[in-house]
Every structure is written in structure tokens, then in C-alpha cells.
Amino acid sequence: MSLPPLNAIRAFEAAGRLENFSRAAAELNVTPGAISRQIKNLEQHLGIDLFARVGNEVRITAAGRLYLGYVNEAFAKLESGTRAISVDRGSQPLHIWGSRFFIRLWLLPRLPDFHLQFPDQEVLITTVRPDEPLPSEFDVAIMLGKGSWNSMGAELLLRRVLMPVASPSYLKSAPPLRAPADLEQHTLLETSAGLDQWDQWSKHAGAGSLALARRITFTSTDLAFSAALDGLGIVLGRRGFVENDLRKGNLIKPFEHTVDAGDGFYLITPDRARVPAKVRQFKRWITGQLAAEQA
Image 1 (tube, one colour):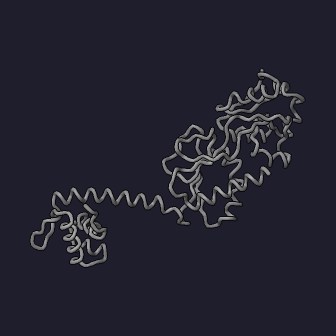
Image 2 (cartoon, one colour):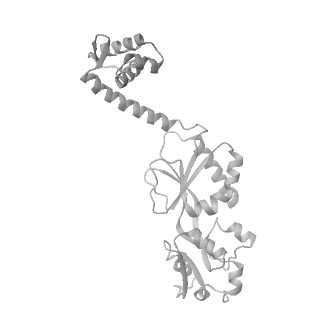
């Protein structure tokens, strides 16, 4: 059986929901006679009575109520699909989910440039923990990992390359730091999620495991980074995040040795048949920024 005309379906949905031809006609801005004709056409197409006509009144039949359920379900899916592919509306904000560390220390300082290039694009930012699952609906996400996020697309932005950094005030007041083994005399800043990273760096630098007297552990990397800026100790900085503070002299890199942590920050996008314009422009902007800085 071929599908009935969409106009007849719309007339039936309104009449069935309101159980009144006149009110359905007013809602659709047509005459009650037009509603009646559309429903008759639909009944002939289906071969069933959708409404019982008693005098000037109409009542939806059991078959009509059953069919109305299918119609409502189809309309709901159509509405959802329309919202999903209507992606180029400039009034929609760009919703960015991401690592608190990346957003606070990399994205936010550069966001004014994005607004200069795309002044009409509103941005909504939500920070998430590394172990927190992504929501069912989002525009882009920037997360730390190894590139696997189920069926979603993931594009590497920055590999996580670690290097010790500290403030000039801390190094001036702390014991001498001439070789990696000297780190045992210093306060090292770390995160609860990366307790082995100092040993990882130290072994790659040829100093073996560090027998430390003082460690301060933070719940997030950006807190550990802020503590280093405040002179509390030495932190493992991330390439791509500390260069600005190194140039300004806010931080000093006592050793040239770096170690690749084996993961990185990825730009994640949902698997969609059509990528929204706001997502395309953000991807072009962020990859362009990174390329320029790495060059």
C-alpha cells in the first residue's frame, strides 16, 4: 500500500488530537470542510473509518485512535530528525565539552581570537572529568585519551609530552637542581590520576625511580599547574600548554628531557551524516591555531 498524502495525515493528527474538526481547522488555518474532505480521503485510502459521525459531532474510532498513535510516533521522529539535520542555524550555540585542564589552560586564553573570527557564534562550554562519559548529544568534545571513543570521530590535537617546570621563585629558594636525581630533594606536584608520571619521566631521563620526601597531590592537573606558578614546587608541564609561561619567564624548564605519555588530547565529534557549519568552523579554527603554534 502506498503512503497517504501528508496533508491528509496532518489534518487527521490535528482532528484526532483535538477531537474536533472546527478546532483542527483553526489550528491549521483551513476550513472545517477542508478538514472533513482530507479525512474522508484518508479513510478511503486506508479502507477504514477513523471517525464516527453522529449528527454534527465526530468521535474518533478505536481504529482511528490506534492509527493516531502511529502518526504521533512518526511525527515525533520526523521532528527529532529535522532538529538533528537543521545544523546550520547561526542562532544555535556551539556546545563544547572538554577536559578542564585543556579548556582552562589552552582554549580560554585563545577564545577571544575565535570570537573575532566568528563574532555571531555563541559558545557554551562544559568541563568534564577524564573518567566522565560524554553526553548523548554534543557538538564537539576535547578529551584526553588514546583516540578510541566508540563510533565517534576523534582527531588528535596535541600529544601529551611531559617536562618538569617550576617558577623562578621556587627554584631560587630550593636546593640546587643540576641533574634529574636532584629532584629527590624537591617538592614535586602531581595529580591523583597520574601518580606514576614522575617515575615515568625520571626513568626516561636516566635517574630511575625517585625516593621523594615531599609530594603534593591534587585532584586536577590545572590545580597542580597553578600551584607551580605560585611557587609550591615542580610540576610535569605539558608541551603546548607551558610555552607561553616559559616565554614570559613565569616558569623555567630545568631540564630539556621530555617524555611522551602515550596519549593526547583529541577533538571528538558525533557520528553524523552532515557536520554542522559551526562544528566545521571550530575545527578549522582550532587546527589552524595549533598548526601555527607548532610551526
